[in-house]
Length: 115
Image (cartoon, rainbow, N blue to C red; front, top):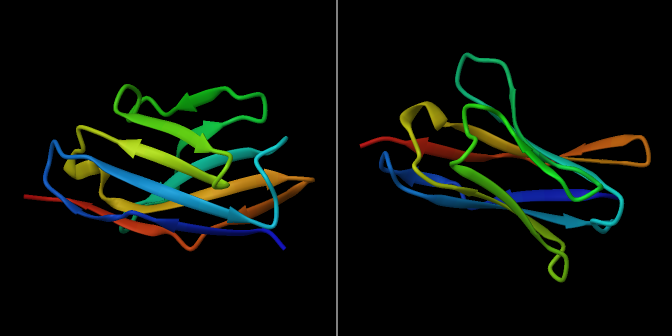
């Protein structure tokens, strides 16, 4: 059974940084596609970034140049480094993994950007 656990959220001032982690069990990063989504209060869940099974990364325009995905295959963990955070980045952030025709989600981690 694939299981995802996000961590690293918290309260940060505008302009600050956070690094979210998505720890994966039950599979490896070999031949999987991962996504990060976020959902702000009262809004629909929106796509933030992806790490394809071919090793490419893509980002939503709203976070491009500020957020970076990386992976540590030895720890089976993916990271979302978020820099220059803005109040509009406030949301619950979720990691999502696609493999063998199935989609798996973590429980989410809250990020609040406020002074």
